[in-house]
Each structure stands twice: as C-alpha cells, then as structure tokens.
Length: 461
Image 1 (tube, rainbow, N blue to C red):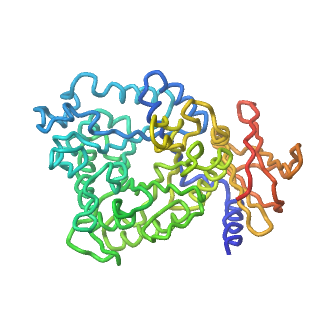
Image 2: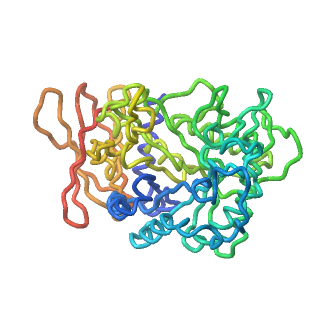
Image 3: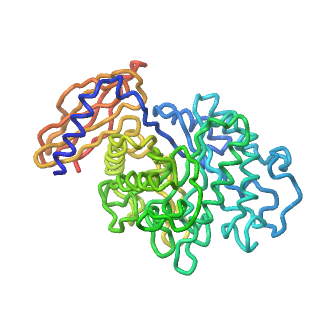
C-alpha cells in the first residue's frame, strides 16, 4: 500500500501542468535567531538564506526582552501600546533586522510570545504563569504600530502548549493552557487588526509543538481546547469562533525518521500531518475556527550529531529533511515549510552537553554539515519494494531547470547518470528507479548564473 501511495503521489506530481502547480505556492521560511539579531552577522546570514532560494524568515519577539523593568513585580508607568514610550534602544536590534531584510528582499514574520515581564503575570513570581491578555495586547499593538507596514504575516505565541512558554498547562489534571491562550490570541489578533496598515496581514493561530505528556498538552487536545470542544469535537461551553488566517504547527519528528507515527493520536509529527488536517476540518465544522484553514509548518528541523540521543548521523540529516519536505509538499493543505537553525546551539559546559537544538545546517563552531550543501537542492529517496522513489527540488531556481540524477553503486568509486530531467517552474522533479542495496544518489544542476552545483550523496530510506 505504501508503495502504491508514493507512486501515485509521484505520478501526480509529474503529470500536473506546470502552471497549475505554481498556484497556490507552498512557501519556505527560515529561522536563525542567534544570527539575525546580531549586528555583525545579520547581513551575511540573510545573504546565505537568499542564496538558498528562501524569501521569508521568522523571528520570535520575546515580550520579556522588550518590556521595561521585566523583573519587577510592579508595572512601570508608561503607555505600553505606544512604541515610542519604550526606553531608548528597545527596538534597535529588531529595527536592524527589518532594515537588513528589506535590503535583501526578504519578508519577515513576527511571533510575539512569552516569556513575559514578571509584572504582567498573575503571581508576579515568574515569567510564564497566567500572563495578562490585556497587557499582551498592548505590547502587540506597539509592535504593530512600529512594524505594521513592514510585516505581512504574524503568528501568535511560540509553543503555548509547552510549560517553558505558558503556565499552568494543566489545572486539576485538565488542560488549562488552551484557555489562557485563547485570551492571549484574541488580544493579539485585535491589536494587529486595530492598526490600519495590518488590515490584510495574515495572522496565524496555534504555533503548537508536536507531542504532549503529563506536563505538555498534546497538540490536538490543545486545538480542541482553544475552540471549546471536547474529545469528540462537541461544544463544552459557549464561545465564539476565533478568527484566523492559518494554523501554525511545529511537526518535529524523532530520530526514527520522518515517517515515524506517534502512538498517541493527539500528537502530530510530520509523518502524520493528516491528523492535523482532519482535526482542523472537524473544528471548522463545529464552528471553532474558520473552515479548511491552511497549515503553516513555521518551525521544523532534523536533529543531528553530535547529539547522539536525539540526533542522527550527519549524512542522514539532509535525507530525512528532504523526505519531510516531500511529505509537506504533496499535502495541499500545507502552505509553508521551514528550517529551524542555521547553526546549532552552543553545547553546555556541564552535564549532557547537547540539550539544545542540533538541527542547524552548520555545527555550533560554524563548520558546514552535509545538510548545508543539500538545503538548496533537497533530494528525498525512499525505498518501496524493489524501487527507489526520488523527489527533489532546486529551490533557488524560478524557471524549469535541467537536473541530472546520478547514482553510485555499492563498491563503486565513480558516479553514473540515472536520468536527466527538467523540473517544473518551481524547481520540482521526481522519478522512480530500480533499487539496489547500498546505492547512493546525488543531483547536479547548473543555475541561471551558469554556476554548477552538486548535492551531497543521499541513501534510500
């Protein structure tokens, strides 16, 4: 069955006219937080991102980092909705990013989120417990007034189903973070729409992480919670439909690979993205959200070595990423895919060193992984019975491009040509070939700038 489904998807990809495939377009976003707010690295990083064929970045805006006196229990006296009322220098790094992105022709999506100033919480003891929706709305109003004419897409609150961003997650063993988020989201939505320049901006709801447990609310449980629905998608109380232009989700998988199926049916990794499609449709029919919302995978990546607990070998990282992108690409409801991190998080000095994210295209020391070379030309290779099914994309090119697919058989030192194909106008191609154990594939292509490119070797999975 799996072979048949993959072949059907591949044949559909190859037979649909180029013009039909060009619309609607699935966009690609990139997130590189440590570089993009660094004056010394922002321009070089944007140049790299642009060369990958990516024209949008996502930037988290931590409320705590911009608020005056964030550690104080008492709110300082100032007009929080007026960006000019904030201390001098508050917006300088974000201003610099906006100016650089504009110069490079790259769009910016902003995600205002917690942690929050201590004075904006109910307990005044930490930076995540019951944040004030009213105060958050004022902060987002300031953001919208300052950057509204430079931003066309917003997403609200990063991973609100995670305790490091919002508490409490549960109350009396029942999910509580969805209730908190509902108020925060509505306040932010109204704040953005209140600014004339933002009337047509897209505003995304959700930004959920992929899996839950006793401390983290499962993403589909969270989705139903913000829509006031129970496990059967029936109303639990009176509440109005939330407005939204799309649903944002982080469909991370495990080191098992992109086809991993989480056992809890309320979890959503990339391999079961159809769960989210079906859930959104049921929520739409129940009146909790607009019908048939598009899905924006605003944060995604494949963890690699040197993290040997969660990560995969360096050569497997680009292979898994390409398969994940293929899964997203053939799903008509997915409007955006993304890459999280240009460079891995710095290792810790004590304990297990790799407790951050090792999903970058570069190692923490800046050395490029094979994933860096592969990102502009992802190649997914999956074995189905006695065939290898290949799907790929030449991301920087905006016109049909000739691509040569090469193979190196097990025990051979040289590469031979499998086939030369012409991509669609979006740089997409696909083919099927006989499987031989131990074979590896790569792509070669010449860009519009006449430069020749060769991707890394990719094995079938």
